[in-house]
Image (cartoon, rainbow, N blue to C red; front, side):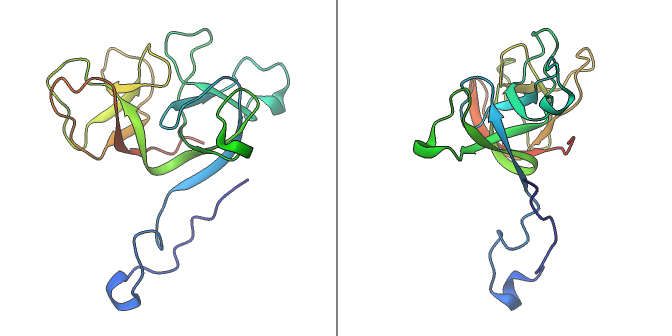
Length: 162
């Protein structure tokens, strides 16, 4: 199901509205193909045999899988009864805009706001973009990660690719 990206208000002071009024986040609903967690980077089912099924279900994004699962969004929440995120559940995925997502600081030096992110070999996790990695940039870090923070959820801007 598509969401609207139309802006209704841009002046929060004069109109008295909050940041959600002109939020440019776009959310779409998909079917989980495996157990997911809120904040996981996800990819389409590129190996689906039916053309329509390619963009119906989502797996954790992973540059170490075959075929490579290139990320296009981040799990926001479950829409299934009971809030489950298991295979077969309907999940909402942020395909563009701000969301909390799993990001790694594997280098241990910390990451600054504005850092470009790419998917890693760990399913569902993004890290500092590198020219040596062939995966496209999937997001931009919108919150600082302290040195040696490990794998944690941080605010990111998902770059629209779907």
